[in-house]
Image (cartoon, rainbow, N blue to C red; front, side, top):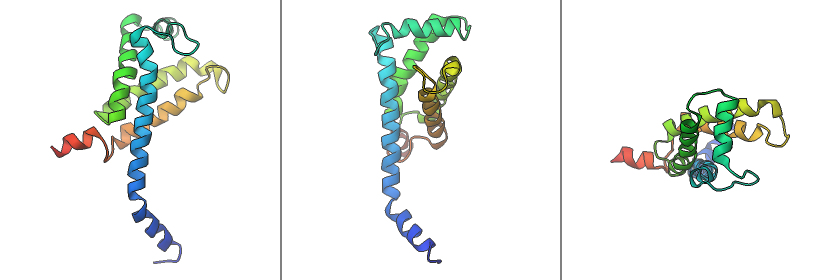
Length: 153
């Protein structure tokens, strides 16, 4: 073993648990952040400077994406962020939920694209969330997740 490889080998074994913990914390934080965006939509309450986040979502789906059934899609977005956020935090059905969130963040990035970068409501945040969602869609829930518990029986 080379002189450079020895410290790396020692650190790899020692920090394997830290890596699992960091992935679980990142997944939980991502899920809980998404939950905080879905809950106001589901409850019909304000979110920051947005008086009616559900109405704002429906308006964007209708006027920018030009998709039919905007109110139904708005409800699906709210459920994905609210319920899906909690599922991600727990690591339950991580891959499919994260894939749906990646699709949502792609749409939001498209909608906010003209404001790139760092202007009020720019797309840096949804782009970061897109890549977090892609990471968990590929990585799964990890060792410390409901998915892993269910797989073990």
